[in-house]
Length: 263
Image (cartoon, rainbow, N blue to C red):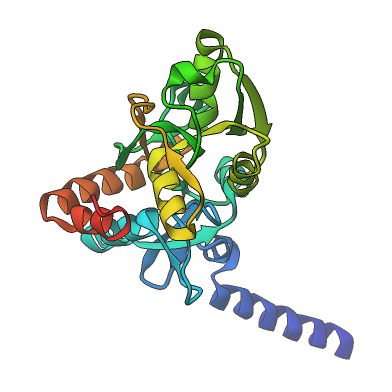
């Protein structure tokens, strides 16, 4: 009898505890989608894609994407958590529903749209360019004939190089990360590389690399956008787009771009 009474007593305590924790709905808070004041949006990003997201000398996570998201959140009054997961990790998190959106210098392109990416309005128009050593004899795209060109896998720069390789008769070597690609050009193993223009200009300036952007090699470019991969997240896209329009109108956007690119 005592055992039965104790069992009923502890069952009652457990029920009260679960009710206090919010029961099953607590899973929503656990994955960061809600806080005490309402919904919190989880936004995934890359670990380093200067000048769009990276850590400064103080260890603070900064960049164009970081500042734009912060300004839009303030304008639209929403809560968010930015998670630095690396490119592949960020994409996987959004695909798996562990994050609501990705902002990581993601080029708006049809193959991603076909794969289920739902993009915001473009928040930056990025071109891709050819990058060569400072003392290179390559002066134009025509001079790439017979040369070895480096690209980073899965990037808009790689797409641009593959579009041109047959026309200008050069060979393409694929790398998994940008720093290794740059060093291959500096070492003379590759004659040039293709990279997003703002990223390359910032990297050359910040690190003093013996490289230069080949004048006149830019393509028409494409926009970067924040993306979700679930139509139920349209609310977040709508807030992002509205906030983006507002910060462009009030000058905040221009201040952010000037801060990082001097444009």
